[in-house]
Amino acid sequence: MLGNVMTRRGMLQVGGSAAAAALALAAKPGAALIQSGGAVRATGRPLPDGVALPQTPAGRKRADSVGFAIVGLGGYALNQMLPRFAHAERAHVAALVSGNPEKLRRVGDAYGVPQAARYSYETFARIASDDRIDAVYVVLPSGLHAEWTIRAFDAGKHVLCEKPMALSSADCARMIAAGRRAGRKLMIAYRSHFEPHNREAMALMARNAVGRLRLVRAEQSYRMGPTRPSENWRVSRALAGGGPLEDYGIYGLQAALYLSGEMPESISATAFRPAGDPRFAEIFAHVASQWRFPSGAVAQLVTSYDSAGTNLVHARGTDGALIMDPATGYAGQKMRLEGRDARTISPGDPDVQFAGQLDHFADAIRDGTPIRTPGEMGLRDLRLIEAIYASAASGATVRLAPDGTMRA
Ligand code: NAD
Image (cartoon, rainbow, N blue to C red; front, side, top):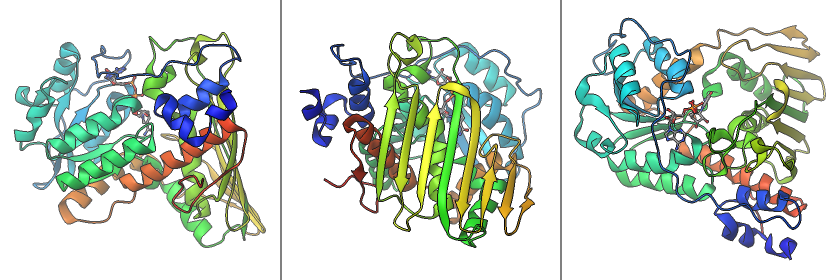
């Protein structure tokens, strides 16, 4: 019986990840189990529409500026991160890696990257002897993070890896081990840790600004247009895992942790995949989970690719509430306290989060300062994601050890 197969051990066997097992269970009774993804290769894509490339490359700011090789020239790299290197004090674009030669040429010219520092996926290993490159920034689809992080460590470089760190805790552990072997640093690009509203929210909660925390609520959703796995990696299980939770819900998961300052001791969850919708042939449409913390506080997290857009986080305590809506975007954050100390809070421009994380990693590389969002944090989060899928698959509450691993 399927139910018997879905023990934790069984899940790990089915497709290499808890998301795979949960997805298999979400398939209609009698339907074939969803095939496991298999190896996916990094491949080139054309320059996305509407990308604004700079007319003049940014100059270097400091002699000890850290040179980054950017791997994956997609929407986030081109529209958000590459332009923000100009705002960083100690980080610059030293090299580009792409599978599309025409895009590589145009982006390389715009950012002033020398011909010799333009790599393809096939020539990537040669970065090992390129002293212009100190660090690799992995901005590929999530299912490729582990492979390219490990390749970068094998080339002797430090790694800044986009979220989610990987699609399984086993891959996260392999990435951390590769970094240790190479004696290089690993940071996960959790930009909210560098965003003034979220920083202030952490400080307020640490000072008990809402009294004793009782409830956290997080909602991260948007409605995805018509698409299918062959044309959009975000709906492909091999590249996106279970879908909205790894991509968007992870912001709510992170907020629940950094606002509570606790790890959940148990999680119960449900995940939904409608039949007959090509968007959800391989991933979930919604994932909802309920967490219990040792303090007695609870969290409710929902995330969806099929609901009108929202990005809110509420933390409600015995004396008030912290309302963040929108909570973790690129821009436009709004935050207020309700209750005892009711007020609106505008601690700074959210835009600093992008360059802030680059400079933070540069400082860690050059000065040995501690990394706020290390690989161990990404691993912790993947453990919780696996617990969410395990509970969704079994219908049972999952109990957790303090490091987020599931208790037998
Ligand atoms: P995208 O689809 O716009 O770009 C993906 C890039 O990867 C493209 O350049 C594409 O050519 C390349 N690629 C290589 N192999 C591929 C393959 N097999 N299939 C598809 N593309 C392939 O995606 P994106 O929105 O730029 O996301 C990239 C990463 O950045 C993801 O890990 C995502 O989670 C992360 N991201 C982070 C934030 C954030 O705010 N921190 C925001 C958006 C995306």
